[in-house]
Amino acid sequence: MSEQQPTTEKTRRGIEVFRADAGEPLSETQMPMEGIDESVMAGFAKVMEATGGDPGGETVRCLFREPKENGMSLCHAWFKSGFVLPRHSHNADCMYYIIAGELKLGNQTLGKGDGFFVPADAPYSYEAGPEGVEVLEFRNATQFNIEFKNNSESHWDRVAKSYGDSAERWAEETVPPSGKLVHL
Image (cartoon, rainbow, N blue to C red):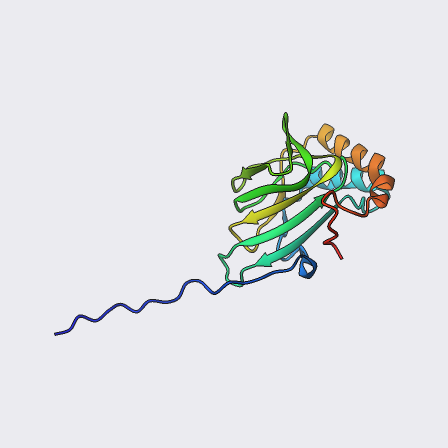
């Protein structure tokens, strides 16, 4: 009696190329907002009041997303000079790699070639440096949430002040620190 070999499925596709100018803005379907409570709404209201609308200090584009549910994704984010991210988390692990500019994470300043890892559900915040910062975001998910966490009123005040003080300057910042315009 011959032994039958198990059937194997190909689990990986072939090489895929992606282009920066083909990236799409990160949609609310890919990154839904969760945990929006009264304090978060109050924080958003402070930002809107300080800027008169969208502050325009960030651009995030999804460059690559595997078609399967548990696939990988790669996003490119450009945060303009002094942009302060409200403290938040995502429900997926993420590796951040700085391709240009710098950011301040806690008491550490990270620059081109540096990076950091944020495990799923860990709250974090950072501030873009004086030239702004561009990061690549590598995730082990194609969909992930954003949940604003532990933002005190003083943190929202800092975010709103930063955005209000920077909105006009951000309008003039049309080229990211790398000099490569990928946000068409």
